[in-house]
Length: 50
Image 1 (cartoon, rainbow, N blue to C red):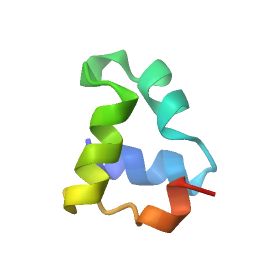
Image 2: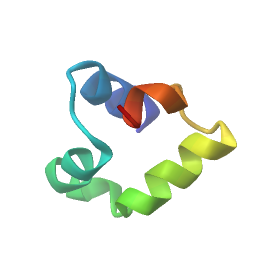
Image 3: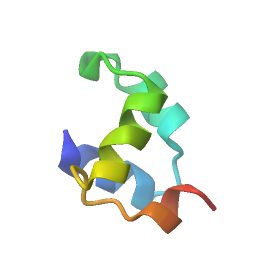
Image 4: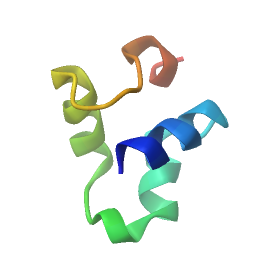
């Protein structure tokens, strides 16, 4: 999941779009922000908040 999220963010996609495009993750946009905040994702904080 982390690798896919990083690839999507690198393409310019928001967490909102990632959640819509990947229902197999079965998580919310807020959960992705939480994972990011806790350091569970390779995606850096500043990348997603722009």
